Image (cartoon, rainbow, N blue to C red; front, side, top):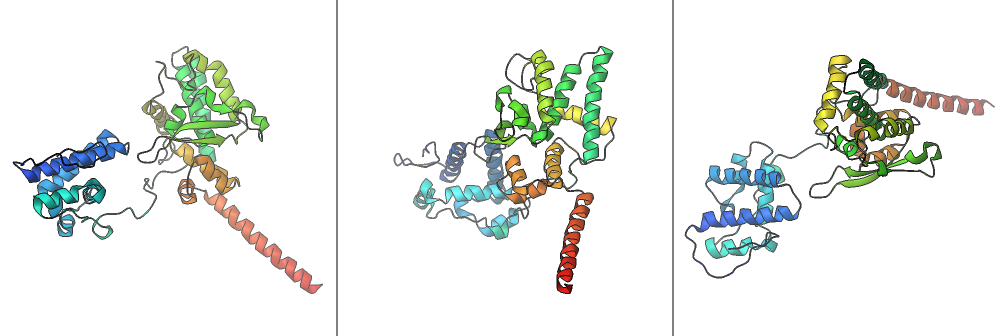
Length: 356
C-alpha cells in the first residue's frame, strides 16, 4: 500500500498480503520517514528514530495497533521513548489514514500509548553541563593578551603559522564582542557589517548581520542583527581586514582557512584548549561557548538592560538569557549594597522630613 511524500497512505486496490502485519509496519515507517523529511529533519535523525521503534517492536513482539501503556512502561528505560511517542502520534492521527487501514486489515486501530505520566520528560530548560561557566574579566583579558602574544612570538621566530594564529585570536575577540556561537562566527562575511545611525562612533562596523544563527527543529538558520557595544571592536575588525584577511583569501569570507574554506570548529577549539589548559592553566569549565556566556554576563554586570542583552543574543525568552549569565559574587555584593544604601537613604530622608 503506497504512501505519498507527506506520509499519507492511499489505497490502490485490493491486493492480498502474505505477511500483512510486518508489511503494514514497514509501510508505516516509510510514511513516517516521509512525514519527517517534509519537516526538514536530517536523515541521521530520522534513521535513529526508526531504529528505536524497530527495537521496540522486536522486544515487545507487538505491532503499533496492539501497543498498550503497560508495554511502554515495561520497555521505557531512558529518554529514547520520546521517539516512539512521535510514531504513535503519526500512525494514530486520522489525517494519515492508518486508522482505516488497520481497521480493515486487523479489526483495530493504533492509539497513543505514550503519555507524560509514563515517559521521561525534560523538567528544566537548562540542560548544559553544570561545570560550564563564563570567563571572569581578568581571565578574559589574560586569554586575549596571550593570544596576541602568540601571534607576535610566531611572527618573530620566522616560523609559519602566525597568520592562522592571528585569525583565531581575532575570532575569539569577535565571538566575545557580539556574543556569537562558533557556527555564527565561522560564517561571517565582510559584507555582513554596516553602519548604525545611532552609533556613528563605530563607523562601518556598527551592526553585524548574523545569517547562520541557531535554528529551531525543522527550520532554516535564524537571522538576527547584533549591535556593536565595545569601542575596541571596530579597530580589531579593521586591522584584520587590512593585515590578515587579504593574505589568506581574496573572497568575502571574514575568517577563511588556509585552504580557502571555512574554519573548522575543531581547529578553533584545538587552539582554545591549548591556550586555556596548557599555556594559561585556567580553571576548568571553559569552552568556546564561554565567550558567549561571558558577553551576556559582563553586559549584565556593567548595568546593560536585560532585554537589550536578550535581543543581542537572539533569545526569544528572558529565561533563556538568564541561563547564560554567571554574574560574579562581586556584582551581587555591589547590587545588594546599592539596594541597601537606597533603602537606608530613603529611610533617613523620611525621618528628616518628619523631624522638620
